[in-house]
Length: 406
Image 1 (cartoon, one colour):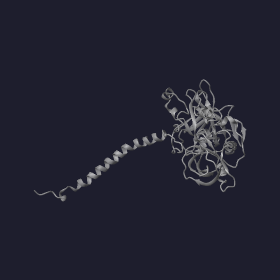
Image 2: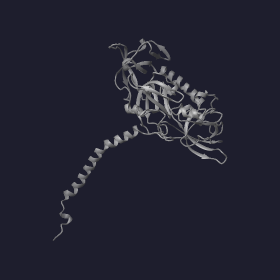
Image 3: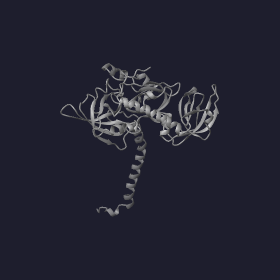
Image 4: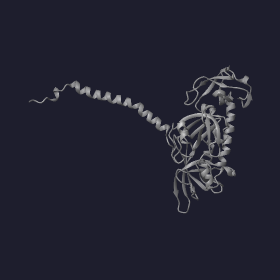
């Protein structure tokens, strides 16, 4: 029997089989694409931070609400979205950043009632008990487990940072059981995740502060066509009410500078925070430590420490905890250090300043370990801190590890 040779095979079949396989492969890949995208989104949303590692961009969830409670010493608090919603308790991550009036800030700077936007992550490993939520609370409000914040900012910081302002359309008299005057606005600029992306009505009354050229002005200065910035708070029947309206850049710049100076005063007395990346022990009790500074601070603070390279002045480095609280007499018991090297990191992740420093220290403190928090003093004036801000005893440390819920 003669065998059929290759020339007897239908040539069209040879071409069709790979084509069919290709179509099947493309179809299966197309079918799997949404599932892969969902998995990546879920992984980002439920990312668990770890000591010594900054989270990826986009990690966590966006939440907003009025600040209704705060513990400024331990950098914690609670926001509430609407009058009928439960409080959402939070703790700032050690590298968590706060912004107020467009400038770096601290939880202590935010007045109660200020409407805030935040990026909320799961607790960092080892900090799961910082916000002591019961199983019943988590069952009723699963989102409560995202309670560690990497960024918290008021409305004017949130919107202006992303190129958004509001165009005034005019005033409207509200209806209903408690009619209120409304400021009618529409957004100008890009659409923003978690923001108001359509025309809105904000309550406005005699308590609203209206700023122009660094001074208070009357409501008659608000006119259709103006582009303004606003800060908001809760209003009756879960509306949003204006606390401040800035009619021009000069008025907002004045607020920004006041807040920046407040921030400088705080950090110069409490020192610039970061965490230890690496340690090299010396033979005589000292050694070297490499520190990455946290982000969100005024640029001049990093420049102050960078300018100490060359031995003109020695810095001081002390232990701190995840709340950024230092131990008592942190200046007296800190270790003197000489700046040996200053590196800049390209495209740093959220929470990372992009600045890493290597110090030679005369004494290795217990907290000089990879992943632990330290604070470094620049060429700033000595300030004695109030004792209740410091951790004085092991009992103080234990109390600071868990938030006391009101």
